[in-house]
Image 1 (cartoon, rainbow, N blue to C red):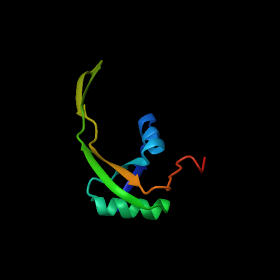
Image 2 (tube, one colour):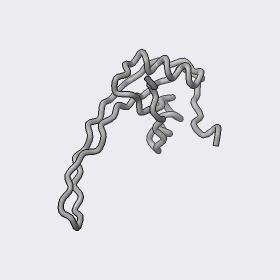
Image 3 (tube, rainbow, N blue to C red):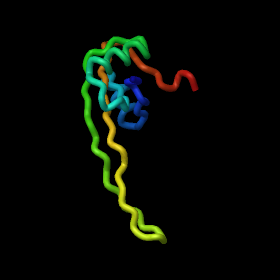
Image 4 (spheres, rainbow, N blue to C red):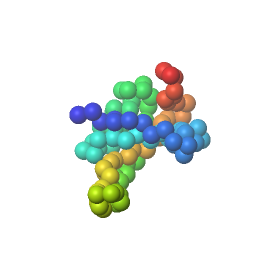
Length: 96
C-alpha cells in the first residue's frame, strides 16, 4: 500500500511550511498516523513531530447538459498535515 499519494502545494500550505514547518499530503484513506509518519520520514529523510489527519467527504455536483441533468459526486480523500522537527525542511521544487 502506497501511503502518500501526493503532496498538497497550495498558497496556504506553502505559507504553513514557511512559518510553522507544517506540510500537507493527500494519503491513502486506510493509512493511520503511525504509517503516515514512517512514510514521510523514509521518503524525505526528516523527523516528524506530529501528524494530524482529516477525511473529506466528496461533494455533490450537478451538470446541466444537452442530454439532461447529470448528478454525481467528487471522490472523498484523506489529508494529513505533518509537523516537522525544528530545522527540518521539505523542498517540493528541488527536482524541477
